[in-house]
Length: 245
Ligand code: ADP
Ligand code: MG
Image 1 (spheres, rainbow, N blue to C red):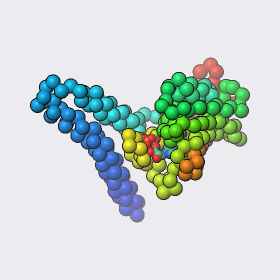
Image 2 (image 1 turned 60 degrees about the vertical axis):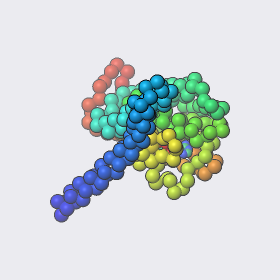
Image 3 (image 1 turned 90 degrees about the vertical axis):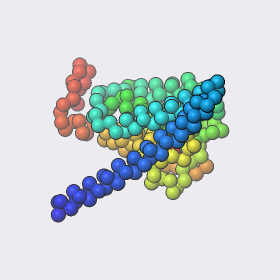
Image 4 (image 1 turned 45 degrees about the vertical axis):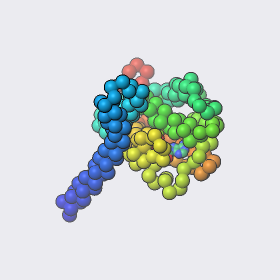
């Protein structure tokens, strides 16, 4: 009956909350243990300041985890506007090119589209997605390598491919990748893909991962040119350049 289905969903939700809470508690307890241990040490030997940078690092880590969590749990809907996707991608690529990495990384941007490529999107949130994915690609290439970002036009949407030459993904890990807190990295939060998935879905798009262990990974994001969700509601802020074609 209807009631039963509701109950099941409720139980499912509770178990999801439980899993998340376990993940959060675990992630935050580790840095707290480090801070607490060092503070106790300093309490006995007030002159021992050399662990302060370490403690600050752990505080930063807690902060990072919390801000990513807030991002994930945000219930505010995105604010859509007609924005140039190429501009968003180029700014993220430029950001990574300007950051120095320990390993040599080359980012190639391939755009076969006429510019600008206007799509209905929340540009800030899309930027967050592209940052997460590029960062993962770079982190997958500890010895350095090439990262390619390609934009391809499809019939009623656009496809963006991010290809790296990194370590790849174990086939057993594939189903877990977008689960909050799933990480194979010593210092990962495991929230980047979960956030990215959520944002792409908000845009009515899809995010797919293809990988060959030791060869590389390709992340494919498909976005509709116009947000199907918002279109139906007809509540878009119309500015001068917005056409309804
Ligand atoms: P984090 O980067 O903090 O680990 P993410 O949600 O961004 O969290 O990624 C989750 C996991 O997915 C990573 O730990 C890694 O195992 C895998 N992964 C994501 N992108 C790539 C990639 N480009 N190459 C190899 N593994 C990846
Ligand atoms: Mg990541």
